[in-house]
Image (cartoon, rainbow, N blue to C red; front, side, top):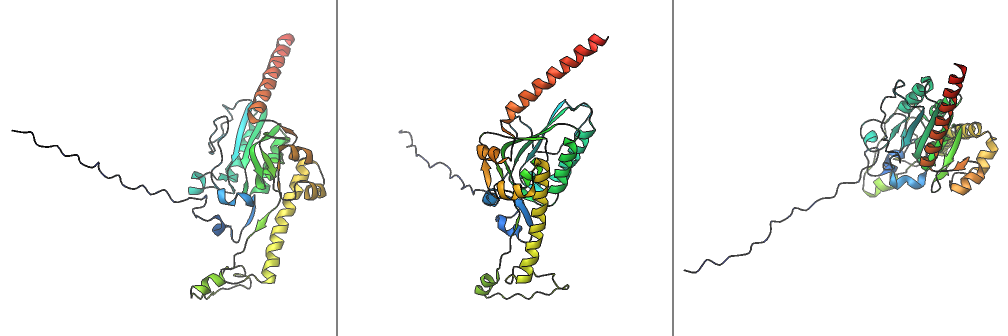
Amino acid sequence: MAAPESKLTDPPAVPAITPPAPVTLLGDTDPRAWMRGGVWAFDIERIDSLVPLARSAWGEEDDDEAFDPRSAAPLVVVPLHGFLMRRATGLAAIFGARGLVDFQATLGAIAQAANVKQVVLDIDSGGGSVYGVHETWAAVRALSAIKPVTAVISGLAASGGYWIASAASRILLTPSGEAGSIGVFGVHADMSAFWAEKGVQHTVVSAGRFKTEATDLAPLSKDAQAAMQRRVDAHYASFVADVAAGRGVSTDAVRQGYGEGRVLAAEDAKAAGLVDGIQSLDTTLAILSDQLTDQARRSELQRLRSV
C-alpha cells in the first residue's frame, strides 16, 4: 500500500509588529505642545530630537546616585547630559532629562569632600527650562572657588548647558563639539483659526485680569506679547550676566561676540572666547590623573624627607 502523500503546509503567520509610538521627554509626541507658555534656554534647532543624549565616554550613567565623600577619588567626574529641568521625575528622568536640584546637591557634597582635588563636568546638553539654571551656575561657581572645576563639553553645550559650563574654572570642547546658543525664547501658538475650521468655539471663564492672556484659543494681544517679552528679556539678562562673570568679560562682549544665539564649532568657539581649549574628555581625564599622581608622589617624598 502506497504511503500517503505528504502535504507541505504554510508556515504559521507571523503577527505584524507595530512600531512603538514616538516618545518625547515630557510624554507628548510633539515638543511644541509643552513648550507653550514657558521660557526656555535650549537650542531650538534640536526641538525635533529631544531624546536622551550619549552616555559618558567613560561609561558613566546619567543618574543621580548619591555622592559618597568617604569613597570619593581625588578626581571626580560629574555628568550633565540631556534635557535640563529643575526636577526630572517619572518619564522625564527615564528618557534622559537631568534634574538640576539633584545636580546641585552632588556639587555641594563634593565641595565638602576633602579628598577630592579635581572635578570634571562632562557636559552634553542642548539646555532646557530656564528654571534652576542660574542656581546651578551659582553652585558650580561656588565649587570652582574651592576646587579646580573643568567643564568638558563632550558633544554639545547649548543654551542652558553652556550657561552652567561658563561657571567652571576652565572650559574645554571636544574637537567635534559645539557650544553657544546664548539666548532664551518663549512660544505662543494661536489655535483659534484651527478650532474655528473644525466648528469648535471655546468659552474661557477666568478670574484675574491677565490670567488667560496667553491662552492659545485667541491671538496674543500686544500687551500679552510685551509681558512675554519682558520675561524673556529678564532671563536673557541673567544668562548674559552669568556668562560674563564666569568668563571674565563684559556683558557687551557676550551679547555681541559669543555667537548671538548661534552654536559655534570648536575652532570658532575657541576664537570667540567661549572655551579655553579643544580637547577630548578622555585626554583631559588622563592628563588630570597624571597630574594628581605626580602631586601625590611629591607630597609623599616631602613627607619622607621631613621624617
